[in-house]
Length: 161
Image (cartoon, rainbow, N blue to C red; front, side):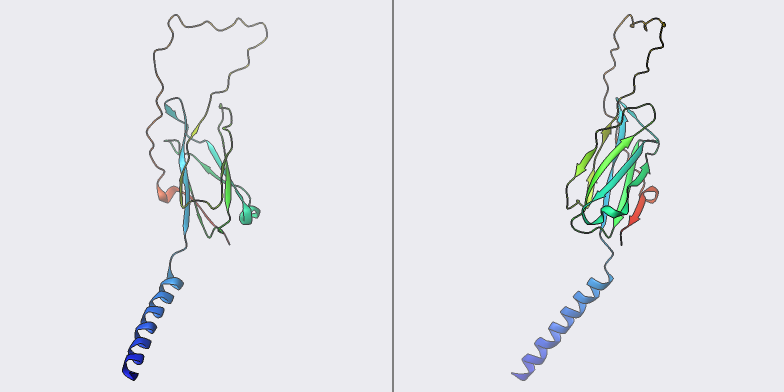
């Protein structure tokens, strides 16, 4: 009976030792928020994407990322507390700001969120004639452009704590 107890203690030590080694050396969890900004069927490069964290991590201030030539953005967080949420805002020169989007807590490890922007309308100059309507209405139907993810090595990376 004593041999069985020693054997069980050895197995338990190996299992606990392995778990403890894994727990202490595991990489921190990464939370990725990515997507694209577009208008009609074209990507919007250089749009400013702002993520403002809510909850326990609200004191970090907003995080910013510019979209690449494909209109893609990518922000990676490590060390986020479990109760973290976020509010995303998008702005670009020549476009109306997008409606802010709220991500409820807890944030998912991989979140994809696209934003469609609308061109701002130029204010007519006083006394100028109104613009002429085209002879034929446009036949082009806009399709959302293909999503090309921003490369991970180009992502904005933020470590909390």
